[in-house]
Length: 237
Length: 178
Image 1 (cartoon, rainbow over the protein chains, first blue to last red):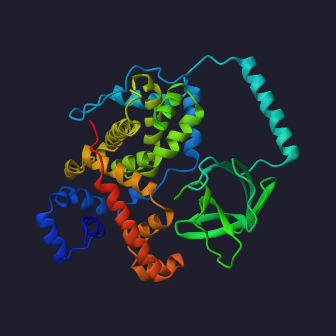
Image 2 (image 1 turned 90 degrees about the vertical axis):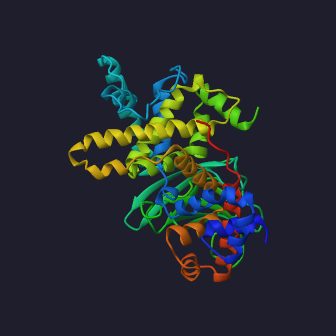
């Protein structure tokens, strides 16, 4: 056995006489042992498996854009770990989360309100707004791709509209398949080959199956997701 | 100039696309570090949000020749500790003597959290799923096979590959610079 095998054993929690004998003589494995044992412990921690909610990315982008140009501060505020922070320090941290107070311009607000009303009338006259919308990043097999998936929640499932960019239509003998997943449980949301007007239907809700991902599937009898992932929101909890 | 440097330059220039790239690369390790300290999902999300804002505002001070990961890690941990203190202060009536032992994780521990999460995100999905099933969900190989709908032999081979790959990733960690 090689060091890689013993290190794998350390991570998996195995403890054999052979491993102990190796550790007694191998300085390299001795050096990484605490890190691997610590890593094994962390794998049992939900901190390693939970993920931020879908809306956080857009929320952060919106917040930064509204905050103005990057680099407006000269340095990162520092925290002295040995001293209790003052209330001002807490307020400094919390302040950016609060919109700046400005004197409202009544005419500007009325203009914005009118524009919103017009936009809402336009949207509702063409198609109801989705209940949710999520940006989907390119997966390992198509990192250049991206998509926006809009969803409408209904009593019988979820209507899904996919607008993908950076993908080619599925080649002959293959098709794309959208999946909604909760951990290892995967529900197909339907298949497609072309990328125009992709409208799909899933029998489950995104609240129960938060992860959305799209695979490229060969035409065969295997009904499980293939390993070719072209779009993926990533694991959501 | 690496892609990392390029995205940081674009981040500093206020490019929304760069914000999204950095988010998708680092939000989960940031979230794990914050959650490891705060043990609360919404607070951890708040920490990630605040960390991004601080990074955004401090972008001019960042040396683009260095890796962005330790920088984001440091900001996130500091924000998480501040939120931890804020929450403790708000709940001060409930603070007990035993809370003295409940200090946030230390610098190196939190860095290990970051690196383990980053390594997990870099692993193939099928291997990561097996690790989640066997370590976090504490399933046996048989139970994992039933849950994932694959043969037990597949679970065993994936588990072997997963442990070997993750051990390789973790064994070559760099120390975080303070």
